[in-house]
Amino acid sequence: TIHADTVLISTGASAKWLGIESETRLNGKGVSACAVCDGFFFRGQEVAIVGAGDTACEEASYLSNICSKVYMLIRKDEMRASQIMQKRVMNNPKIEILWNTETDEILGDEEVKGVRIFNNKTGEKSEIAISGFFVAIGHQPNTGIFKDFIHMDDAGYIKTIPGSTKTNVEGVFACGDAQDNIYRQAVTAAGTGCMAALDAERYLAEFENE
Ligand SMILES: Cc1cc2nc3c(=O)[nH]c(=O)nc-3n(C[C@H](O)[C@H](O)[C@H](O)COP(=O)(O)OP(=O)(O)OC[C@H]3O[C@@H](n4cnc5c(N)ncnc54)[C@H](O)[C@@H]3O)c2cc1C
Image (cartoon, rainbow, N blue to C red; front, side):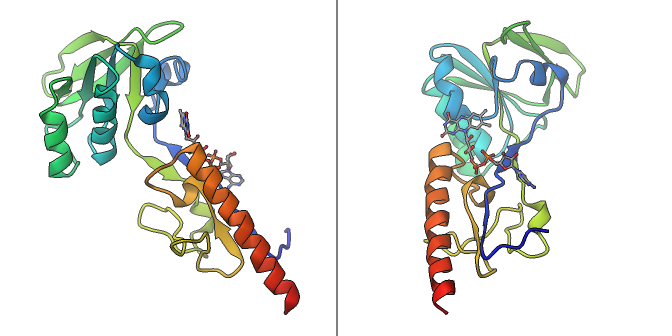
């Protein structure tokens, strides 16, 4: 047990993956969980993205500005995303939505060359030539160990008092992706990390003066 006068939580959030072997093998070689971060590597190329929520739609739209074509692979025959986001991808001529479609295997030895997909209604398999494969099926904040003490939203992101990194427990501050379900970028994590350090420093100064 370590006793501390203040604690900064910066445990991040982990992307959810499909869990297939080729996804792990080709991670960083054309497989990514962050379109905003890695999209520019695929300028003018064809890519696929898995997911059907608002984030997947937003990332597909973002990729369509950079890539020549975006295949959106959707497991069901409907999307979870809000109507406005659905409209945005459906009306985008560079995005082709493949319904009832799941990933069998990402193809390529050293880098992504394509993806083998299957229709979960008909069982029909087919291959698409792509060079980028994005997974946008959500993130899991690494905050489970704090759940009995720290207030969180339904998804497990730590709630901080707006404009600060303060949590519901005095002296405990949270920063980075563990408390950010929107931006999840290195620069925003570093920014809130700086805020947490300053908040902690001020807290300790007050604490010492008492
Ligand atoms: C593929 C990919 C590419 C990206 N590219 C970019 C990019 O180009 N630009 C950009 O701005 N952002 C990018 N990001 C996002 C960026 O990496 C994150 O926003 C940033 O790392 C979040 O920082 P963090 O410190 O909050 O969490 P992390 O960097 O995730 O660090 C959390 C740390 O806490 C540790 N940890 C977790 N649980 C515990 C525990 N219980 N006890 C102790 N330690 C624990 C973890 O092991 C880890 O070391 C990318 C993300 C991904 C997935």
